[in-house]
Structure formats: structure tokens, C-alpha cells
Length: 479
Image (cartoon, rainbow, N blue to C red; front, side, top):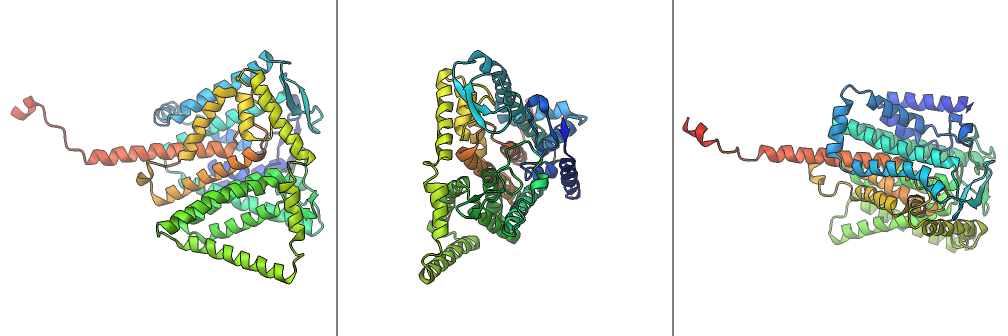
């Protein structure tokens, strides 16, 4: 094992900030997700795998919950009130069994893409057990256990304010490090965040695209930063629309600017998809005559941007040529590039592996794809995909049907966390190579499920107060 002093310092700083924010467990866990390339130790027995710092905060949360005095009674209550946890547990068992059994059962019967032994790229090889079976399955199971632990905490008492502070802290950290990375490159200082990149990843942080600097923030590459930015943007934008809180509006603008400047096809593709529900919501507001101040601000900002673009084009028609070349290289010409063709080939071979294993899958972590849904299909098979789809439906549904029993602030926080998770799924569907939906998905699953359970409990309590008293037995009436 190789320890990193910088990683330990970052962990201590995040834990201290979480303690000062009155949420050492929850706030620290969520905030640590901003450090996408910081690790404390590299484990040589797992091929040099280096768990990111959020794993330690996740373990701390799980251990703290497991040490509660009435934990078994609380676990029984949670599983009795939060039914999606049964699906989650079945999926975790299926993933653990599959990661050990399937690569051995179908060894040599199909080809997959795995990390090279020197961790310098992805290579094609015959299916066989690899270290990623253990590491990626461990990440997935850890996320599932975090969901259960959070459900215990959220059902026991109202900790929604800690969830809100944690996600706001995450968004601020992410935006700050993205701006610092960009400013450092513009100033000629290079990768100023290199000291905190202690994970054993291939770092593609000091590169350019069509004359523009690529923003990597605290991550190992621009596409990973872009995917995380989409999630943060989803949270900040939704929270602003639900509460009209001014800091959330400015945070949304900063994150949007970073996404536009990131030069990542994942960012532009994901942003295009996310614009659709925003446009639909604006159209519904106009048609129903329920236009809010925030709606007018969005329309006004779009008009101003269009006028500025038109004025600049009339003054100098060549001004936007570098931006046009950038869009051509990262969006329109992406599929024809060697990188685009390589990633398309990964997806094709992943789907081929699904058919070669008769729909059972190749096991968690056995291969690398370039799209989260395809990775889920190829690694978990049809049965595992069905269980993942059931959990995704829970996140998609959100608080539908119980919103009347939830206070406005809780509704705003839960909806923002839901938007963060779904935006992250959109980014992962464009570029993620693993079947793990990510820690934010598991946190959102816990927040939504626990809030729905509390809302149903409140509804039963309120409705019970208005039920007529049952008639007395005949013997009691005669007495």
C-alpha cells in the first residue's frame, strides 16, 4: 500500500468543514464527492486501485449507523416502510454473486475491454476474472449500504437541512475548483490542482481542444468533470426555481459557464438533453398562466445572450469561428474521430458480450463500455437491468403522489437532489464505462425513499385524527 499525505489532509479538511456545518457524517460524505481524483491509499493487491476519499466517509457513515443502540429495530422499521430497499438488497447480492461466478462461467467465450496491467489504457482481451470485479462491485455494494444507512438516519429524525447543506457545499466546492483550474491554465500556471490528484488514474488534465483549455477541476479528465458539473447544475437550478434563493441562481450561472467552457462532448450532449425539460416547464408555465419571476429571468437572459451574439457577429463575423471549430471537433466530428470510433466499438462489443452470455451478463466490473445503460446490460444481464430499472423508477417518480404531505422546503431539497441524480445519469449515459450509477444516485434513492415513507406516515397520522371513533361493544353500551 502507498499512502498519500495530501489525501489525508483533504479528508481532514472535509471532515472539519462537515463538523462546522453541523453534519459531520452526511455533509462530509456529500462534499467529499467534489474530489474526483483524490485518494488516500493505493492498494497494490487490487491492481493499484485507489479508492477515492468519499469511500472513507461512506464507511464512517455506515459504521456509525451500525453502532446505534437500537440498530436492529431501526433496520426492521426501515425495511418495513421503504420497500425499494428489498430490490436494492437483491441487486447487491446478484452483483456480488455475478462478479465471482459469471467471468468464470463464461471465461474465454467472449471478448471484453479491461484496464491494462500497467494502468496505461484499455485493452481488448478474452473474458476472465479481473481485479475490477472486486473493486467496482465493492463500490456498488458500498453505495447500497449508504442508502440503507441514510434511510435509518432520515426516518429517525428530520435531517433534510444537512442534505441541503451538503449538496450546496458540494456545488460550491466543484465550481470553485473548476474556476481555479481554468484560471490557472489561462495564467500559464498549468495544472494548479495537480497536488490533490493522488488517485492512480491516467490524468488528462493539462490538455487543450481546438485552442481552448479543457477544464478538469478536481477530476482526472474533462469528461468526468463535465458529468459531475451536470449533476451540480441540476441541483442548483432546481433549488433556485423552487425557492428563488439568489445564491443558488448565481451558482447556477457559474456552473453553466463552466460547462460551456469545458470543451467536453459529454457536457454539450448532456446540456442539450437537460434543456428539453426546462423548455417544457417554461412552456407549461406560459400556457397555464403561471409564469414566475424566475421564468421571466430565464427568458430575459436568453434574449440578452441572443442580442449580444447578434451584435458581435455584425461587428466581426469572424469572432465566433474558434467556437464553431470547437463545436465541430467535440460534437459534430466526435463520432468520426478515433476516440469516438473506439468508444463506439466498446459499446458494440459490450452488447455482443450480452448475447454471448445468453443475457446473463459478464459480471460486475468485467468490462468497460462507454455508456452507463450499455454497461448495466452487459455486466448485469437482463435480470440485473430490471432491478436497476426499478430503482431508477423510484428516483424518477420522486415525491409524486405524496407531495401534499411534505413541507415546501423539504420538497425543494428532495426535488433538487432528484434533479442532481438524474442529470448525473444523463452524463453517465453518454460517457460512463461502469454499471455503477454513482454515490449521488444512492444518496438520492435514500432521500426520496425515506421522505416518501415519512410523508405516508404523516398522512396516516393526520387521517387517523379525523376518523370517527369506533362504536363501543354492545356489552359496554349496556353497562
